[in-house]
Length: 362
Image 1 (tube, rainbow, N blue to C red):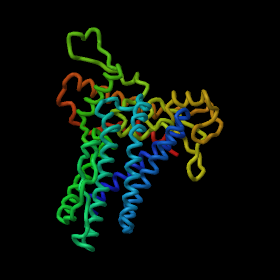
Image 2: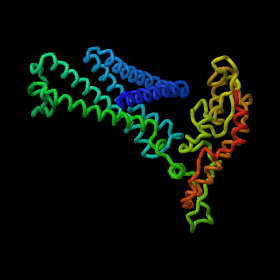
Image 3: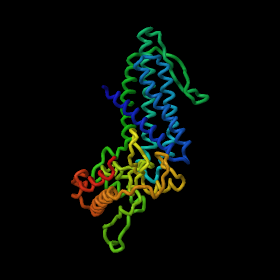
Image 4: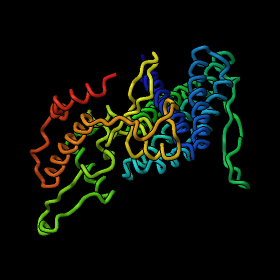
């Protein structure tokens, strides 16, 4: 399989994930349901047109139809940009607030997809010229564009014979650009920081995040030193830089799809086989939901706050993990350079992990 095929598949997967996210939000956020429905429709069209153009190339359909697919995809990618902006600010409480992540999600990722899409259109166009040249030779002409001095717009000012060497060079350049743009789109959608993250980098990001959230507290008696203390246990949510921690990312809220900080269980939900299975929620979000709805947001069965199941073992595991990260964040703030040579997975407490697994087994 070529690199181009791999990057194309990765882009389609990323588009599919974004589609599923917007569909999920259309069910979760009632006050913004129509926005997420429109976003879902746009992203479904984007994904369908992208896949349709790929299938069309394999089936060798009329290149003009492929160009129509790519033009439609181009328009849907343009339309997706305002949805990305809106989603970033709607999820602001849970998002990494850094300017870099903002640029990743709202500028770099969508525009990389647009560039890759334009490159595909260029490739399709040049390949069509090559096919016509093979049939008709130098009789095949292509337009020459120039600037209209009156309107300052580009227009056709003449025609020239197709140069197969020029076509091939353009195709090669477009393919290389497409691969780069597709790779950038995939990595930025996934989050570059998640790919290049190190232990020290993690705490650097956590420090920046907490400073932004005004969660970093200075001790009055340490005013003459650089020593600072943080209290992660007082946080209402798992800080965004820790969402990918191997403990926190396993236990997520069915409403927010973020890591749970204060978990409770919904006893009314079932799996695909119809067996009862407890669904986790962040306490404050399910309380907010139940204040307006007397039913489970998942099963739609009657549910009250008193019927929710406490999760003490899982909560102990989460708080133990927060203490672990708090300690290493303090080491980072104290400038302990040698304190980051450890395996994050190896630091997981096996007893607390087992207790949480048993408590939440289906």
